[in-house]
Image (cartoon, rainbow, N blue to C red):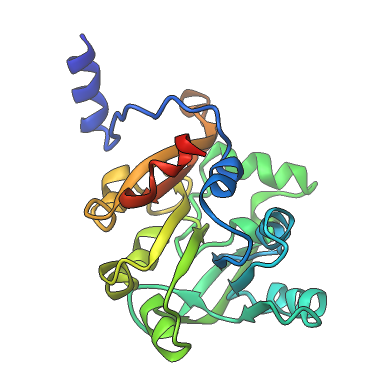
Length: 254
């Protein structure tokens, strides 16, 4: 029976995985692995939510933040310009360098390079939260710069990344595609990213789309904020964590 269920979800593009039996939060895991002076890449910085989170856990962290939407970039500069340990960049990461239009929404954190599915119940719910309809909730497009993580690391002589956090609304696989050389060098310790599994946007991902870049050096290590309201028409996503295989034992030993 388990095999039949697994095959059924495989046909739908989903992959059934056994999740580690750990009650540790992502932040607990990070504290068990890393010391104070870590390097974080915050890809999809938005309003600085993850900057605040990582600075609370690791006050001495150096954070490289990447936000392509100019309005949010300006806000981040105003908020963090005094702190020299936070480097704010106004571009996105992808598989190569180019200019690309991003689809904007009133809630900027859901803006995406992928087109919105206007028939999706989730978008209607989000619009109603802003007391408007879908057409007014969506705010057109903005042309932004895209570069690769590999290029950035080369230009800035980055020799190690402790935490790579990616939240790019369905563009996570292409961010990793542009990090092939960095991944090959094995200088990233942990990767935290969001995977949207349904058709909220014109493109959605599976675990396989992500793990093809990570299978050699990383191990699936956790899942959180798992929304499984698939049959209610609300978006189906999870935030997942991958840890480098040669340091995974620290999670349970510390």
